[in-house]
Image (cartoon, rainbow, N blue to C red; front, side):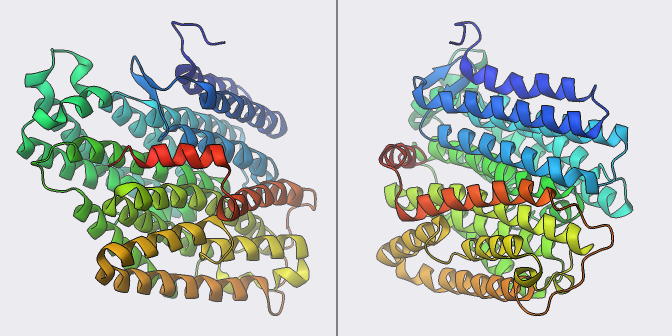
Length: 484
């Protein structure tokens, strides 16, 4: 039972940070991997406690229907990624210093993204996302190759621009609320801002939302400041692609939703929805086109992340109970399915000694367990039934047709183009003539640390697509009312 002066949300944040300090002292590979798994497991157990935690703000934190499933999902992916890392990190060629940096930055990132989701204070949320970004830069750069350094530098510069814009938006929110609240950090509380939003200056709120949307939208991988994502996911350690796609993008989009709820509470502001629809649709169409020109498998699926975050942004742009539910289900489904893809793809790339699509072929014939797992994961990411992304995309498209059918034409085109590109890539990698394995391919035991997390994620995505559990459905329905 958490102490009154040290509530559960802060314990969830500080356990990974304490673990990061412990991991910095472990230079050997196997002990560090086991400790990393143990810390991640403790984090997941603590996160599950949020389901029974009273809702509402508590100091600088809050627990509600919107952030609870995202926090639990984040720590689930953190645990499965740590398990996958135990088998994959041996092939990364880390020396003792880089091994410490990798594991320490991983847990630093986990604590920071948890704080970003649990923060009630918009300033604390900004700081947490900045810490998560810096940890991501370190993880991407850990190989030290020219390509990795370039990718980390691009991540730092572009996301640095984004976080600076988000800071300006946060300041404008504070200034809008200042005449209505006492001096202090009350003007940064999401709950306070939401209560007084209807009395704030609508022009200042509009300005704040534009800066916050572009700033946090950069970290969510939305066009036009999306260019860091393909490089970061292609050049960093293989396991990091899973947490970047599954966690950082969700935390950033969650911040946009909090801002949307504040600005949308004022009847005189410009509706925030069309801005989200515009950026989201641009992301979907650009990514759908770019997928046909990618030859690197990890870059290919990084562009898929841009497409899926665009779909979620479109859903939240339309707003309302049904569209918001589609957006939330899409965030959950994308995180589960895309991390499953990166687990399978990462192991395949190590087996073949390349991450080029042309060099990864015939996996079903040469490595049946891995080949079928990766094939089903790619099919799930393509939005094929019966997985969660099919359910969310179907729900979104039917809602768009019912409310503004003309938007369904470009949206449907983008969805179909992207799905066709993914199915083609699935066929190239998983079927056909097998390509030869690399001489230094990982040992067979490492396949267990890949297939276990992969099939767990696919099982959960299947459950979300076929039969959403009643308590989770009620929680997501309550969460869908928060962004407006």
